[in-house]
Image (cartoon, rainbow, N blue to C red; front, side, top):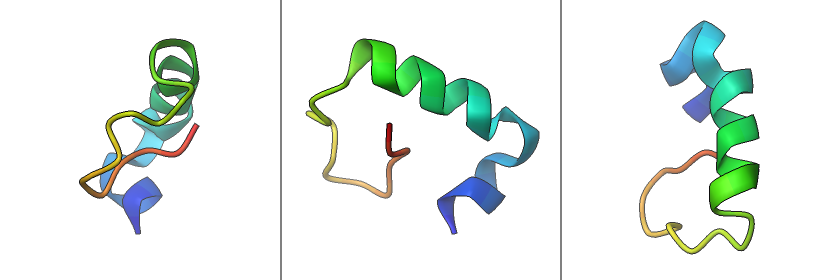
Length: 34
């Protein structure tokens, strides 16, 4: 799934996602869930 696509970067990207898009405004693609 999405986590497999990002590999080792996924935890860092989830943290960034929660900081900058906690409301999940950018949800129209296969995105990272905060």
